[in-house]
Image (cartoon, rainbow, N blue to C red; front, side, top):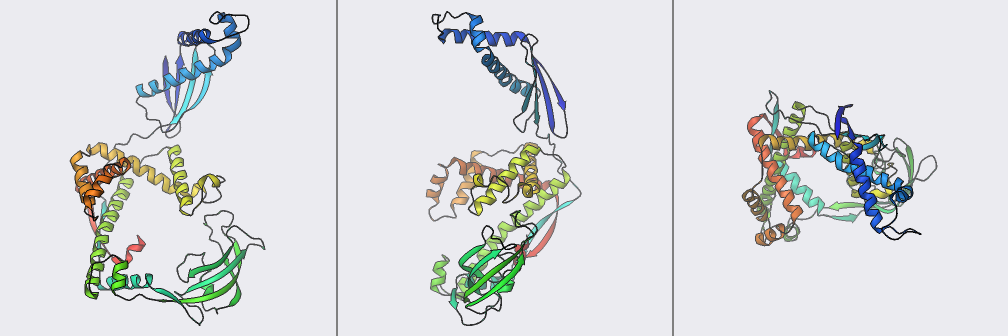
Length: 433
């Protein structure tokens, strides 16, 4: 058996495998012998059917089976011998399937890139530092009071930040479209939860009034058939509600699971939670900046098939988040697949680079590393021992923790080997990142 590997475009490869006729004949005869032991044909005793009769009757199907067996046996061996890492199942085409001449086939597939990561660079990643000002704490408290407040009916025209209850029916060129109607729909004006222009036209409207709204769907709207289209909505405004913020009292402390006694302790607890959140955000933003730098330093192609698979996963996740079954949306109209390609390619690159960097630093997670991480996580719960027992009985959760420990080790190595510069941002600006 011989084979030759040919490089095609980008990461695509072609493997041509030739198999001697003796190997084919041996496998074919073996199948005939096995068949002969069990087959029953009229006019012949079991096990006594002549080979030529069996070949005449079953030769075609046996030939196909032998070809499949030869490919299944030879392809992995040749791939391993040539130290290739295929990224997808190969497309097989037969070049010669005449047993008298030997068997030859071609397998076309993509391979994963061989990445030898570069780490040191004159460029620097951004080490994020988050400032928490008094005004940030004030804003956080006010946000909590608003979120835990009550909506009360008011007898006035609607205004920004009010909640309105409306019925609406939309049309495009006089025709209804999917999701065009709603009854008793609650909408906070200024929340930007509707298409641009919709909420703006609900401001300064009277209760118990009917009116029309004209607006257009964004050009990049997730549904192709609606993108860029102008719509007309008939709206009936039923009620206007004003938010009455919650009070800082015992009831609020209980809702927030806070063990505090007064407003000063409440403020201190809010500050503490903001500081804990900032530490997490600082690490995440810094890590993301590291990876962005590494992607700029390390240029490599990724298999198109893997990007497509990742795009499909991301699309399915997006569909699931809005309660849609991906199997029912196979027409690709809702969330077109190509809208995920750029982010999918970036995610694939990061995954491959991550693996290459782990090998570069020879990083591994030992049992002590994992145990310490689990113990630290358990401290966040009321019953740490119960949490630890649960985790050790959840293989998927343990695998996830192993990856986190590995990433922490990697970030520590990168922090030593890469240059950095500090970037200070205010807590209230976190939403921009």
